[in-house]
Image (cartoon, rainbow, N blue to C red; front, side):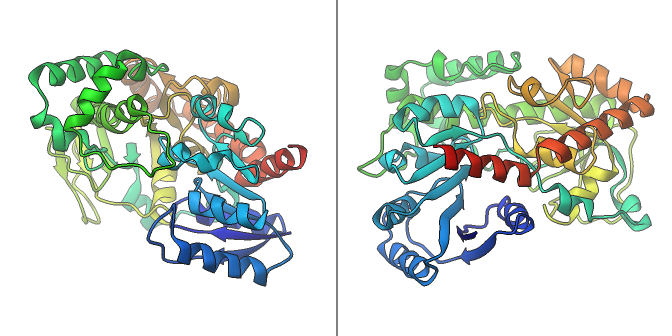
Length: 406
């Protein structure tokens, strides 16, 4: 089988390409500058040329659904497979998701429930996976342990630089700011159920839009104002506040390493260790280590951490983020917030440990830091489960079988 893989530098592309090659698929990389993911005729023409040059191609593939690829494949009457790994994902609001040549796979069940009625025979739910075989190849040296060994770690953004709400907050009427603050505080006390969107009315969302730095969608998009406000403004702000407050609290009782490029000044007990090969260790506090390359450093950090944290971005309402699968695929012990799809895939307290509140999280950190055998057993169970059932290889086979039967 031959696949044309249109790439836009997603962190998932390398692992999925590795899996395709392990499955014996010939991958034709298509990397071309584009002005628009929707209407770029030059991009479409170049893709058509590549498809004509490879007449034995089975389908075109992308990480995340891209309307310009859907338009091109419809013209060619060629199958287009996409695996949307972001939530929210604005291209799903495009009318192009209704094309019969699409086979769209979504990581989040709630996301699938929202969009699948628009093309029920062509939109499917498919959880994330991991490139286990590649992570298995990464071995730790004495130097790696010296650099990365720690009790607790988190690799990723605080979302402050991604939160559009921060740039408009000062312009909102006081009553609207108060409502958002109250909604976020309420949501942060509930684990496993996102009620932000259902808590705002259409009228309130339309008023909020007047103050937002709103990027207009294309003429053939369905503009879901409530969904956009709930996810990309309030949802991202909620994620930011959860991560800041959680890491602040952890630092009051434990020592943790935070690998991020985000501004960490809101975390009062954070201390800078960016670009320091051997950072000073404190018994408590958040050691800010800087950025971590996802292909080389991240797997080593995971393997060297006693406890790996997962805090799911709020717009992922039910599903599991890529982080959980990568943590387990590297053999890491995972302590995560509760998501309703987790018990469908993993067994809590056997493959993964979940917390239901900040005090519960602190108690579990304390317990598993002092019960190494149990911690190592759970980490091994999680690794085995991902390797046996949730690798990219298995996910791709599931995707292909779904396409054959749809």
